[in-house]
Each structure stands twice: as structure tokens, then as C-alpha cells.
Length: 419
Image (tube, rainbow, N blue to C red; front, side, top):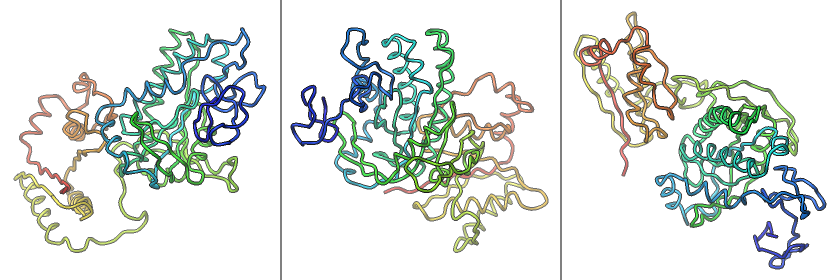
């Protein structure tokens, strides 16, 4: 019996830990979550407790499941996690916590053989972890049939809340495909998942050699994320206002108003994520406030001249290079305003290099081509259907090629100089 405080392995039936003296609470042999003394079933995973002959053998240990998922971590992500070993311990980090849970898991497990249910849950865990690792998140814990993942620790990005929601959307999509497979293989009539997210502070613990990281939550960051998951409907994503404040312009969200949350004095405002806003970009600055561009008159004048040349039939390529934070994006935003202003606005087509599309082949060129043809961007995790190139109205392959190569166009790129 493992102590929850120091993880010391005590003898069965021990009331207190022999190493630290903390009270030892019985745990479910299947999922590892605490259970009350005398309980017949685990309230988390539905596993039948007790040592009687009718009790089914426990499914794969939770630690073994977690280790199996960690072995599937892409090598690039694993290297980044190991690089943070010893550097992040004890730091306060702003992370987005993602909780997943299988809807009605207790009822489903009751009518299935334990080994079959183990296979079902393992398949769900694999699909969840694939989406999390694709956006460079971290699997922190397996909670029975649920998963707790972090975006922002140990690998931090400027767009971790966005990455977390994109991963959640991909998880729901993969679960819909998985439900069709389970209906055929295990005759499960309905298999759904719900997801909750919250953004807040955590204290980062030690990173082990097996890519495991211990986390201690500050305040109610994880508790609120768990409450979001519990309040979400089947096949939906529910996020807190803390998360919505950072990504509201990128995703279509339904304001669900304020709800009462257990353990919170005041009600919490929540939002349901409906999908991605096609073509949306991250807003900069303070919402509702506008300020003039200062100190970039010469650069903006140069860009205006290239715009005039493009309108006259002389194309060009512009490279904007500078340190992070110097205002490259703001300069291009002002240039875009000039291009779209006037009685005869120019056609502005944008392709964006996103941090989570580094491993997607030809993402930038595909993004530009779709903009030229008036098509919305495809999900970054899917390969475009080759048949779609002949199905786009008004964009035959030959005419698109002539437009790209021979029409006077002004191309602009900007890079950030790194030391």
C-alpha cells in the first residue's frame, strides 16, 4: 500500500506510513485513486474492490499505462523535456491544465470484461496523448479513465492556451472516429468524452529520467480545471474565463454564463468551445484601445512604395528582420491597412508559419495557395485531400499556376533574429 505523501510502499492493512507517519488511505488497485474503507466499487473507474474470488483481476496498473504513453513521446518533444531537467524545479509557471473523462465509464465498465475495458481505455489514452504530444504538451497523470495534461510546463510557449484548445478539439474528433470503431468491435452503443480546461499557476517539481514530472498546484488551478470537466456536457469542451481571455478571438465560443462551482465562493463564468475561427489571428495590444504607429515612418513609407509598384505591375519580395518585440507584426498590420484602403483595395493573401506546424510539410505554401483560391485553412494535423484541388470553384490547377507565377504580386516575409 503506497503512501500518497512520500510514495513509500507499506504493508497491506497499514493505517499509517512507516516512513513519514502520514495516514494511509486504501487505493483502488486498478486506477490508484483513494477509496473509502469497506467500499465495494471504486467511485472513479468502477472497478470491483475486495479480495473475494468473484472480484475480477485488476487491469493494467496505472503506472504501467503512463509509462507506455511516455514511451510514445516524439523524440523531439522528449529531448526538450530532458533539456528542462534541473532548470524548472521549484518555478512558478503559467500553465493550461486539460482534463479529459469518458462519459458514463462506470456503466460501460459494468457490462464489459475487465480486460476488454482495459483495451478500450488504453485506446482512448493513446489518442489523447497523441494530440497532447503533437502540440508539445505533457501527460501529468492518468486518473482512471481520465487524463490530466499540461501545456506550458516543462516546455513553455507563448501560445500554450491555444495549443491546449487545439489539442482538445482534435481529441474530440478522434473520439468520434474511435466511437465508430468501438461500436463495430465491442458493440458499445455510445462512447463519448468531455474535456475541461483552465489556465493558472503551478509549481514545477522534479523531472525524472522517465520524463515524469511532479506538480504542486497553487490555489485552485487544477481544481477549477477538474470542475470544468465535470460541468461539461458529453462531447463538448468547457473552458474557464481565465483561458477564454487569452484565446477568445481565435475560437468560436458560446458564453454559458456563470455556474456554481464546488469549493468556490463566487460563481465562475464558463465558455463552451464550438470550433476554430477560420483565418483568425492572435490580437496584439489591449482590446478596445488603439494607438498610432510611432517611429516607423521610413519603414512604412518603403512598404507603401512596394505596394505602389505591385499595383503598377512590378512585383517584389520584402524581408522584415528584427529582434523579438521590435514591432514587425505591427508594421505589417499597418501595411495591410494601406493595401486594403482606398477606392481600389488590393487583394491581401496571408500565409502564416505557426509554431505547432513545424513538422507539417509545405504548410506555408498550402496556406497561401488556399488563400489565393478563397478556401479556409485545413486543420494543421490533417493531410489535405488531393481531390480537393479540382473541387474548388473558380480555381482550376492550370489557372492557379498562371496566377501564382505570372500575376504581379508583392510577397513579404518577416523573421525574428535569434542570438
